[in-house]
Image 1 (cartoon, rainbow, N blue to C red):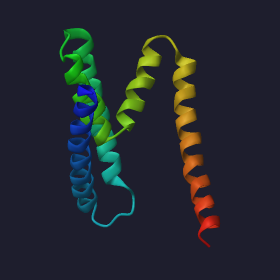
Image 2: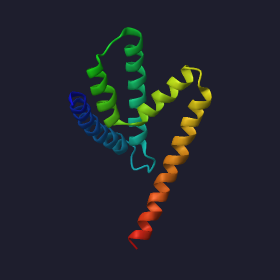
Image 3: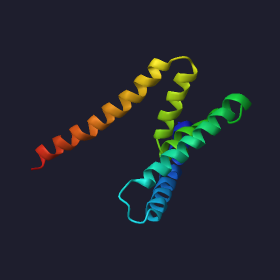
Amino acid sequence: MGKVVLAGIGGFAGSALRYVVAGVVQNWSGGIRFPFGTLAVNLAGCLAIGFLSQLAETRGLFSAEARTLIFIGVLGGFTTFSAFGNETINLWRNGEATLAGANVAAHVVLCLGAVWLSRMVALQIWR
């Protein structure tokens, strides 16, 4: 139960940080409709998880509890795109280029398809 609480606390912090950072960046974009805020959050999350996971692997930094708080909680709340990026790179580094490519394709196609499908269902249900 302790790790669940750590993930929840970190998730709250990461989600709040995402809200602030994305809003600030989007405001800086001067009304351009491109989602710069989301892009900035995803890039920052990917930079953070890459840097911190390398330190965890090579330097043994972070206890299991700290990893739960930081990687699952804070970064997961900030952006799950960082987990996607890290998992894809880990597959690639482990010689699983086909699986890495499949992971990218599956996430893009299936997730965009899921958003489209669920929007179509919602349109049909609430006409």
